[in-house]
Length: 167
Image (cartoon, rainbow, N blue to C red; front, top):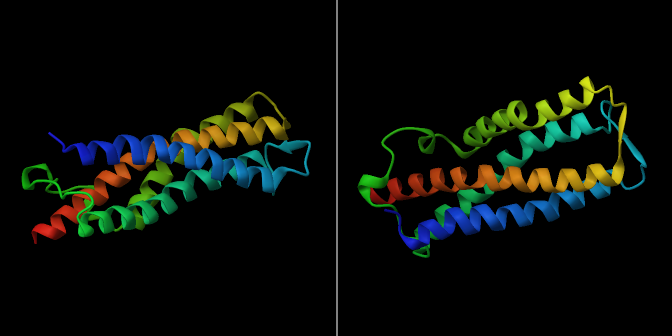
């Protein structure tokens, strides 16, 4: 069974808090990028498709780099206890560098998150989408994506930091 600190890390810090932070950050970025437009084309240089695919890759990569450093630092400082030996995965993604883990999650996010939405808009023959609707959608979508990818990122970092403390 996980310690209360581990459950808080995975559910609250990397689930709920990551969701809220990413709603604000990605909503702000979308607003900065698209505030002067009334409609956003589905494809093109500044478009729904490019923005969603870029976000699907970059959010997990940056999250992985940032969250991994934070969790390792918290384990080293004693703020979060390391996992017990039998809780540490013997193999798997926690052994990989953070950027590789982020790229893996980013690839999954493109194919499972961004591509289906953009494909549906393309199939529906939508030429563009209202900018304010897209900004709101993008904020919520990125927040939900962060809420999904951040807990495994934190788990992998926790496992890696715990293994390093045992070595």
